Length: 444
Image 1 (spheres, rainbow, N blue to C red):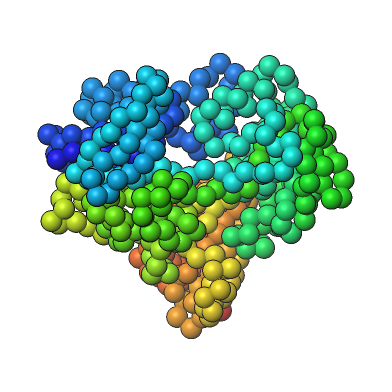
Image 2: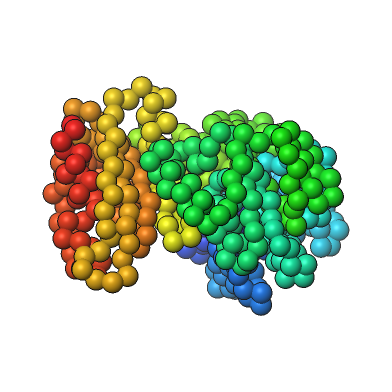
């Protein structure tokens, strides 16, 4: 059995590794168009702190280990340009050897990831404009920071990536200014959570400009319909879109958000072709249908399942889905979410109740902080629908407890009964989650 995998970062390497894990004799060819092996993209902003720390430290494993220890034929700088589903072969350009060749397959895994949305306005193809998406982007940004020492940076867009960069660059003494086209930031978060992020921006003296329509970049000046902004460097992060042109041109069907349409087994409409990761749809358990939320853990889980289903084609398993859990750091705050957002609940006409509490994170022990816990639950039953948190100290731990409760379809009554650990070093006697659950019970 021979499997060809297009894309070797998260989903692609996970699929390849799982195939070899379950079938040592399988032939697995990974075709990766970049010069980097699988890496932890979420660590890229924090690599900027360290001038002499190579971005290659973010590799999941070395090319030699992938080839020798896992027995995977992993080819860098090999770009697939066409897929022929009838002949079951792909056409590949080897950019290092400047040659084109064909590679046949029994199974194909499409794991091409996504790409950043780009500004097509004048001046945004300049060398000092970056789309912080790949390791090459990280290399370029580091070179600008340490060679040209910009005093400020214009960050266009206010999603997770740019907010993480705000934190990093501010602490590197580079003044960040955020330009956002929408009326606010973090649209998937409730107002009560978003307000805390805005408070932190104000506390740090970081300028956020919303409802901004950019017209062009001229030299070091970013022009908008209201005013001009001087930029030592520009980072654009205005969302991503799945890399599906290659798949679509081969007759592949697209689904939510233009991602590759997959069934619960991660099969596509093309024969013996699976898809995984940031290029594919993701089944959302609570909605009972596919969505699109490209995150590293999802890509790795889908890749592993796709690989296992290829080996076990007569006993395939369904992808169990996601609960839209995510977390990011913003200065001394952790911002986290799991389950359905308030916006999703409103769009689906759900009868829900929202409560939130502000509480300390520890007992009588130094080093703690405060946090806000927000719960979304079904009116009348108390079924957990979603939750969000923001605060200092051990926020992510509580978020993971909540994510588990959502997965197990717990109610706020059951959440309030959880026997959570207590020590003043880690929690007050009443854990913040329990305080929020007990408040929620009053509103069911």
